[in-house]
Amino acid sequence: MTLTVSAARPHGALAYAVAFGDGTATSPPAPQFCTATARPAASRTWRFHHRYRHPGTYKVVATGWAVCTAGRARASLEVTTG
Image (tube, rainbow, N blue to C red; front, side, top):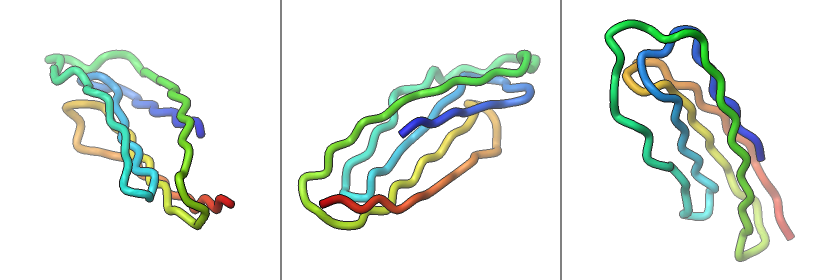
């Protein structure tokens, strides 16, 4: 899975969280700083690999945001294994 987070004028670092639907999730620490003025447009892409322990259908939810910004984008998809 690939996740790209973009922001037009972010006041902080770009960040993400992914819940894989099987009780596991990933959310790396994002720098918790804000800038007084907006930075230029930014974009960042992350790639994820996840192995499910049991066959089934799982709902994956990915969320992306810019730190110090109220808006968040969320996407979900169903993955069937087995």
